[in-house]
View 1 (cartoon, protein in one colour):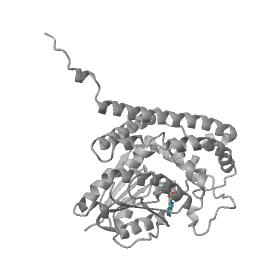
View 2 (view 1 turned 135 degrees about the vertical axis):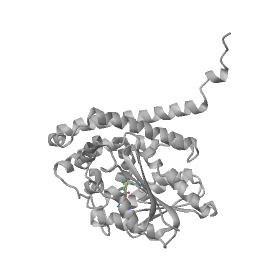
View 3 (view 1 turned 180 degrees about the vertical axis):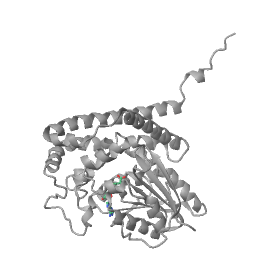
View 4 (view 1 turned 90 degrees about the vertical axis):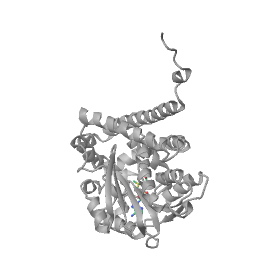
Length: 365
Ligand SMILES: C[S@@+](CC[C@H](N)C(=O)[O-])C[C@H]1O[C@@H](n2cnc3c(N)ncnc32)[C@H](O)[C@@H]1O
């Protein structure tokens, strides 16, 4: 006799539905990013035909591998949420209001970007932008951004531009710092949650801090960045959250304005490829100084040549050729493990997720 299926087996579980919604959400973001780039690439190639020659196409094998790695990234993102590293709701967090408000400005800004690309202008700032006191390497139109990191409009457009660049995977890549951070902080199980101090260096518009807040609701959070405009934007984003506001400070991360051994954990997302080699070492040395013995330092940045499939080398060559990224070529060959060890970090592990790489380092007791 045939057994009748249980009604519960016929109705998809809430988990299955939520996971399908997450995948659909990510597919929507990916579709949007691809569509945006294909239109904007066609336009820029009409305006600047010589640019097209600089961009090498990806092989079909590389495209397939990228697709697989993206699927793995989203799978890991889902699993970490399911395992309670952060709430599932974080997977759906998106700056919708900014999207509708500023997406037209991304297009309006484009002719200015093309003009700078054509004239090879990499350090162009409007006269009202105050450039005093910043390191020389910082005064750049990174990604050809109008006014670099130094205007409110640049801060308003940044997250949108990064989402488009990564086809909607910027946040899933940022979230990969949360698990190693939490695991590292477990060394301080006897410390009361509000007394755990976590610093996000080069916090930009505050997206990583927002994620850390969701993952560690009671910890004391701190963020440092050189850009007053990006810090204003971060303050706006973080004020939307209930709970204590992270303390934001404007400073150069090469000279952190904190006492020795102050933080239990430090994170850094998408900073190191924008620093010259000597600055990278100084930042790592500073992080070592302000981390407590037993503390953890988690870095997330672009993949590098040494541990990426050779099919991806084309992407690592295209990126600095299309965007203004003057320190990227050196970064992709730089040995950050050696730099971390030189500063004194130990027990260093690396991970790769999609097109990003992670270093998890500890300060010995
Ligand atoms: C690519 S953005 C990354 C921002 C953010 N972490 C994220 O996940 O999007 C680089 C950030 O590093 C900041 N930055 C670059 N050099 C810095 C320095 N020496 N000190 C402090 N901030 C710096 C910039 O102002 C910018 O906000």
